[in-house]
Image 1 (cartoon, rainbow, N blue to C red):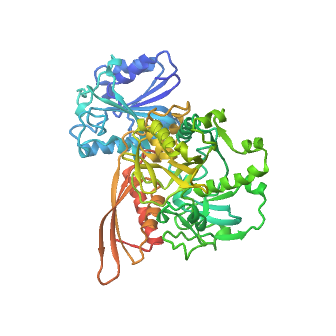
Image 2 (tube, one colour):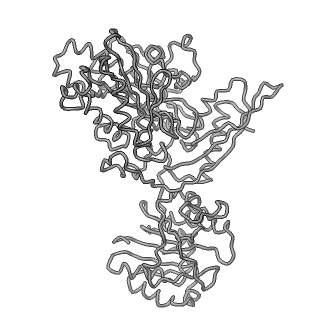
Image 3 (cartoon, rainbow, N blue to C red):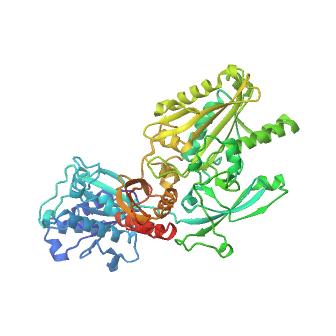
Length: 632
């Protein structure tokens, strides 16, 4: 036990554990408060209790009687105090109580102990082997026959941080007692100590009012609420230690050994016009785009380069209160999000960028103009080149004289909810013009295969290019080529990589949603900039999942994409999978009934059955109000 820690022990029987702790920490400044449910006379009847109590008091500790561990906030002595550690060894309701009563005991204890737990404190609960219901129990009991300790802790917004053996051998004077309310010990062989800590709070949904400069026009719009936590996170800034940045650095450094890479950092707008995307991104699925109607537009005919370079994006945050979300200045501006749009008809629409290809093409066009007007040293300042020996690097590309130019940033895809479908991710886009004789496609593929094959990435030939895939994730990148003006001599080669999924692969992150966690325990593991191949250690172990069905009647114009958007918003991103399990079309009413199964699961927050149900009820409210469905 660390020095200068305050420890509260509850549910003590003969106080042998508390006295053992006091003996072990006799030279530290730890403060021990030991409590039991029984009154003093009854507690003293336990064998060795009197001597153990005296040991605790002699070491400066405190002993309290008649303390109900499910009502710690009501104990007068504990009011106003917080503890670094709260310990409950082998909780039990007494006699032949069933698993349901003991689950209830655990839940009530957890909800009570957070009232006296320090913000960064821990809760230690020891259970007999099999009781906890986690994979750490060997053999593991059936879930319905266990105490479901992690689920009970989640009811108090606690997460399971660690599970380790209960080391009774280190406590020579410890003697367990109280089995079925008898002076009889519990089976401590293979018993497990479960360590819990506080979960961070769920990020509130916000309405982000955006103002961006897009192709000379000042555009106002509202960022879709389900995407509000995916913007302005700065994962790729120069001083970032985020795994997405570490993966990007790993890739760029490796490429720079063969061919110089010029990365351009610029505040590109999130918004792009539909016409612009259509002219340069033929491989993007329009059905996966977040279509945006602007709130208002102000045409700017003369945009000075200085102003545009300073900032192309402004944002104002407004807290969301379900559908009652409008600031005073925008009450009359109603945003419309349209998913299935005919580009020929709706040519004036905008969308959130699904790819960085338009921005990179624009940069390359601008660079050609700059090259003609600026000396070379000024060009090198504008484009930061990875790799110090440009001439040697170019020779490594079999005589290719051009750089690889690249940009990276967040892109958005309106996709169904499944385990590996990301509504937002960081794309790294590299492109260059190379002599045909240098076989640049083969070179880039060889480099990527060398770097990523140790992590299970393989290359598959598909229509429109070469795909980088990994199981069970699926597609993580593409390599494709296109002709140039002198197509007989040169070819343009591009590589698009999903940095988020690569970070999941290279650091063994169990869930891509962890990359967007606000919990400081996530980034702490990357503070020393570990190399790829270092496995991430989850700070929330064995989180439970909960399944709820939802069914409703809709009219003939049913938009499933809007359904997914509302699910993401209402659940705060905790729904990891949605499956359509039944449909029925009424022959007379022109209505269709849909039934979906939603799986709630979170590696980032404490998710209890109560909280998941609360999210599910909020989903019903939002579906009824926004999509005008009738909940069945």
